[in-house]
Amino acid sequence: MFGQVKSLMRRVFAKADNAHSSSPQIISRDHHGISRSNISENALKVLYRLNSAGYEAYLVGGGVRDLLLGREPKDFDVATDASPEEVKKVFRNCRLIGRRFRLAHIYFGREIIEVATFRGDGRGDRRSKDGLLVRDNVYGTLEEDAWRRDFTINSLYYEVKTFSVIDHVGAMADIEAGRLHIIGDAVERYREDPVRMLRAVRFSSKLGFVISEETSKPIFECAPLMESVSSARLFDEMCKLFLHGYALTTYEQLRHYGLFGYLFPLVEKSLEQQDHDYPKTFIARGLENTDLRVSENKPVIPGFLLAVLLWEPVRTLVAQKCEQGMRLMQAYQEAADEVISQQVKSISMPRRVSLQVKEIWIMQAKLSMRRGKKVFELLESNRFRAAFDFLRLRHQSGEEVSELYEWWNVFHQTDYDEQENMLSELRHRQEKNGPRRRGRSRNPYRRRRPQSEMESE
Image (cartoon, rainbow, N blue to C red; front, top):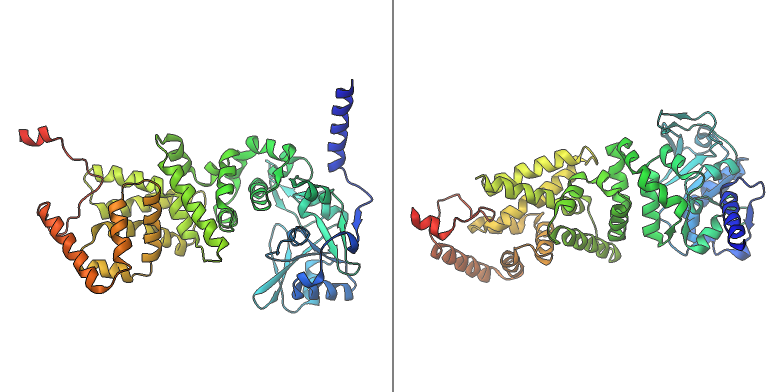
């Protein structure tokens, strides 16, 4: 009997968590750790000026969440009852953007403060047959806006006039519990915008929060909705997922929920077919390396990340083409073009990024050749550092490039005379192994015939 009552109470509280409350929780300055000294001066200017013009204005979303968690927000967003056009009248440095939902961007040099008008309760929205939200320019009240946001922890409002935090959705309880919980029915919210599934993984990985069962369980059945998201939008999401210091955890969660294959179908296929640990080890090491660089405030580029993630499909194609008799350089070029052309159907790449990816792969073939002046040209190339780091990952992950890596590792750090000696020794060793036709590089993927077969000829 007690168990039945307990189960019933859990269901009642679960419904209460998502039910609109007419009395929000107001957390006074004495009971939260947000200080104006930690808020961008430009964000404060926007808040004060909108208030002075007679409008409501609140700091909202991730900025409030991060301040409460003692983190440094990467940006500050504002919510207001002023329409986008009214915001533009208040700020000359304002530009209106967006079609699905109009936003005001206020520019202060390099910093942009995004201002959104309170969204309404959803009546009047335009949706596709599958429930995808197409147009959302229906404005409403602060409370309606709170319930229209995606996760509870992103639905907190900081009021600069009273220094208080306003919570309509039970967000403070979720922050204290380290829990990520979606607002409303998860399936409906994922149908409105499938990217929310990626955001759930991203926030969970970034904050170390546990995704609630009501939020996580529907992801498995809703994952195919990712096919409806534009490839251009997914490039931006991919950068947010993997380039902010928690790439490895994000990757593991994406695979757990069945989302990774919709971002990188060729990679998922190669991981399913593998008969050894190399691809998993290589990707894991590459993502660990990315996270380490972020933690050390070193630059990270999307091109290197994508080159790591897509390497196994490229490597497999190169091997197949070489076995068919294709020269190594041509095999790399064609494999790179084929993999990139397939990948952009899922996640588009700006041309500068796709060129970075291709150059890193092509440089792997060039590094294996090591001929005369070409070696010094490679060393002076602005892509050498990235290509060498990539070669090191291959070596560390168990690919058979140890001799090649060790040679370059010494060569790029020594003086010119020693470099000439190393090239001379390499040339002597190659000549000792037998003459080769000019212009032909040894193909590491071409199979050698058995000794008995060679003798029979």
